[in-house]
Length: 366
Image (cartoon, rainbow, N blue to C red):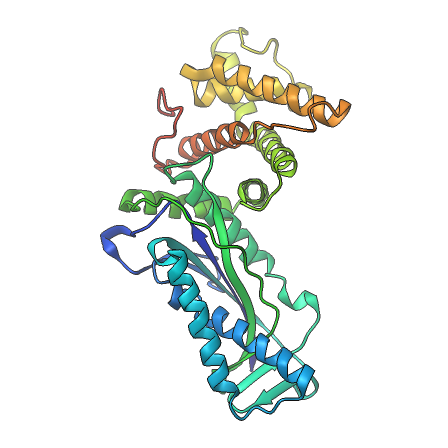
């Protein structure tokens, strides 16, 4: 029986050593176990399949263009893998924590037509859809990366670099002979300051990953937050994406949680309220929704946060509706910081996740 595997590795800029100096720790998995995630400080081990896929891709292209034979292909693939590992050592990647994701799905490829064999090396040619990560794996990945950012010492500027990804086929009868699809994506190498990850931060990130993974709406917020924080996202796109994530978060959590909190507080206060008379969810403007979140989650900083939110909304509206300020600079880091702060507080308020304090922690979530 054939199965398809997807693997992706992400370099987390903010973290170096894992708790107890462990090399690899299990981190999260999907409810059915088809998608698993681990944290590791061994990028060579995490990228083993990806390195081989890259090397095989290079040899596949060479063979298809030159009709080369496969007599010494395995040795050339080994050289390619060694070159990638040497490049990783030069970049300092071994001093940082990596998130490794693997997803498994059934597969029934037409191998008789599309598989190419050269000695011990084999590859499989398919369309671009073959490289799309399954939805369940994407949801877990987005949740895990967002949770790791939330426990990062630098929430507003924490960067994640995709170290690589690959997809390959395995036959149960030959588990040691992967058939690689040859397209692999990778990002640029960058250098960062790293910090050891505490055991408390690891456990909090695991819990936050699980709660966000199981909430498709929060998973979308996490995905947009990840796009805004990618190093290669241009400034305008990063700002618009970060604001969209913040706006989605406010609408989602107000509807699901904090409108009911506001109604209960209204009843207890005999009709007095921060946001006027009682009314249904749809009657609240966005800024008033955020005002309720701020009162519920950060009462000590409520006025300052609401003023910041309104100023950011004004800048976003001026840009989108009147195309003012399109040349920048953009307050993307402020938007990301506000979203990260309230996402962290929301997870602690609803699920007692235990995320570490953020920069604006004047008073802890109630």
